[in-house]
Image (tube, rainbow, N blue to C red; front, side, top):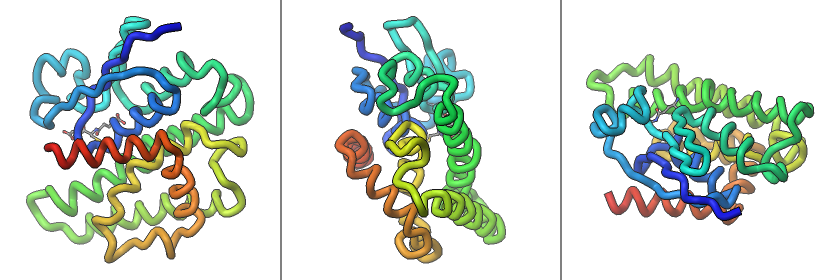
Length: 218
Ligand SMILES: N[C@@H](CCC(=O)N[C@@H](CS)C(=O)NCC(=O)O)C(=O)O
């Protein structure tokens, strides 16, 4: 089957959109990145694609489907383009639901807390140390959950790398901002080993490299 390239609406640094790019790469689905600056996300023509004014969004000319919200996009891509379950699991199986559990944890528990840690550390007009502490503690808490679960396994679900693992990688790119307060290597060694394993995959490494290049080109 020859696929027409999907459009991925993205941002040079935004972790949520690069997360979707990782899934597209893993599934070998062709796509074109369309980069948006933050102010352009909040006006037409993009607002008609995503009324929430954020990235990612995808447009799939093969099915006519347009979607936003990274978790929903990942589920769509898996169900549409991973019929062999290379990075997903047989519908109805225990692993199928466990993978969803981790994806939902990522979109509700990792992304927003990690994002707020960045916002209140770098961009919020007032300095609010107790708020920064709150979100850094959340990074530590979420990382502790992953570290504990990963102490006796290589991947989150079913003994293989899946979309559930991929979903967590990009947000860990923010940790160097908090290097004085969080050391993933020493504080969360099982999490660290899992991240390194995931980042060693050629597809994941490619996307991290693409992101670095997009940030440099900005
Ligand atoms: N829940 C959304 C979050 C999307 C999101 O916050 N994206 C960031 C980039 S990583 C963004 O577009 N930020 C623009 C803004 O905050 O105005 C998802 O998972 O897709």
